[in-house]
Image 1 (cartoon, rainbow, N blue to C red):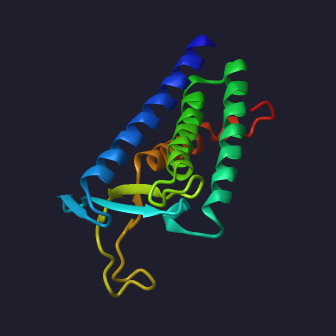
Image 2 (image 1 turned 30 degrees about the vertical axis):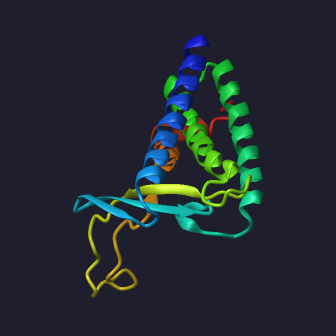
Length: 178
């Protein structure tokens, strides 16, 4: 149990610190919407959004912040439960990655990045992978960039944790005791 707890805390700490360091390096060294082309398929593109996936906005960021705090508390409770029940280490790692990513993004929101208003900040994004352009003749997609999302380290942690849960633990999660 101590190993699972320590590993969970280390993952959460590492992801949150790495995410915040990357975000601050971008905010301190780039202008908003500035782009650095690292390779033709990988760019650093400094953007800020109100915190929803792909920059969507349905309601105020303060409400989103409160919902995220509740979600993090719920996932934290679930992580403790998983540790106490000796769930597989990989499962616990995935849950810790989701929590860590959510914490990384909520920090931006709560501290007011981009707005200076507590609980009303914007999430800083910077990773952009314009892998290719769809040919113009492709219906609905023609001319658009394949995977045009801009994201951050916290988003990547959430996505990797969730995808790994689905791929490796989908049967485990459907059990009654999971």
